[in-house]
Image 1 (cartoon, helix red, strand yellow):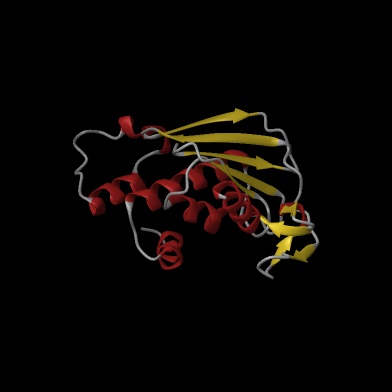
Image 2: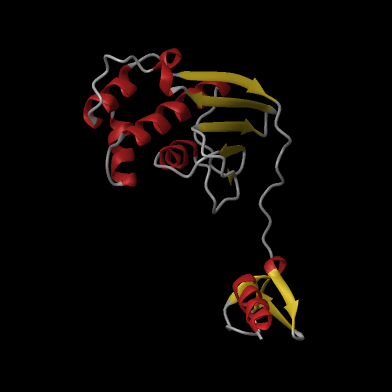
Length: 180
């Protein structure tokens, strides 16, 4: 294991096959784009799962929900798309589990070691793709929910009963009205 994977373990909390897969997928995608870690929003990542490997992607790529350059699509696939706003290039990285040789031991540690040492083409597919450039992150005004008193992004409110409601309060009030 190289030092960046050990640092990643500290970030994630443990080593596991999913983390190793995300680590290799991200490193391969960044190499394809000839990119390093995104300091701001110059790199965008679109992930199609919410598994351990996404922590590797965040750690290595600098794409995060907080900066608005990490987009989650709940498709349940081990697929990442990385897009470079400066060069306008995108790459889709796919993990192919059926390409892991059957003789690789199935215990977690052995599988992690194999994933970290095998050539990318043994279990990853990369192809350049067109990406409709996502909008940069925008800072939105916060307002107080008229029902729970919590601050909420104004664009995520609903007008109900002559007041602005956060989505959970709006759903609860509409649900309560349906039960009467």
